[in-house]
Length: 183
Picture 1 (cartoon, one colour):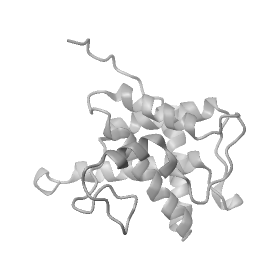
Picture 2 (tube, rainbow, N blue to C red):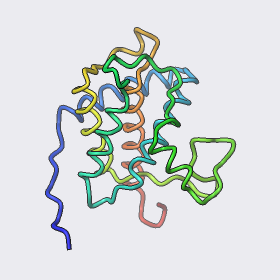
Picture 3 (cartoon, rainbow, N blue to C red):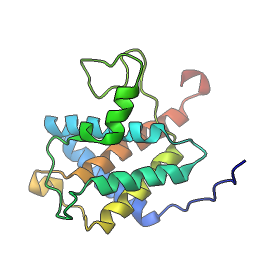
Picture 4 (tube, rainbow, N blue to C red):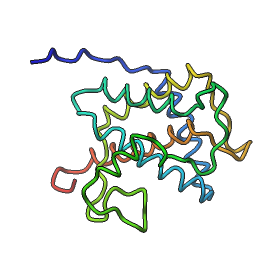
């Protein structure tokens, strides 16, 4: 038997930054940038894939998944990652391995969907919050700081990932508000 996992505290600063940056990017995407919308959908799928291996009672693993994703957002040389119009999320080893290992048929019309036979499940809110904290902390340690997408016209990897987390948090909150028989 393993010892129970100790509670992992959430960072209020990381969650606030996630909300601010994520909502700014979601607003920018809603204004009609189709390439950013496609990149956002890829990031949503990548976050789902990365959290699929995490158990709901293990928020520490979600935090580690977020940290790993935050570290992958930067090139190995330590130079800042360039702006992303259409992010190469499919190149993510976690996303690629989860898609390759999936025994069900992938939907050819929406390559970011896990299956054509059923809707993707929304990760638990607790895991999403821990993932966001781990991601923000790793990205900030790697010298990332958000820019203003409306001013530059470009969105970086980290900002798109935070927008994806915000979209999934919104979906998780909506699903929690539904009666159990409609979920």
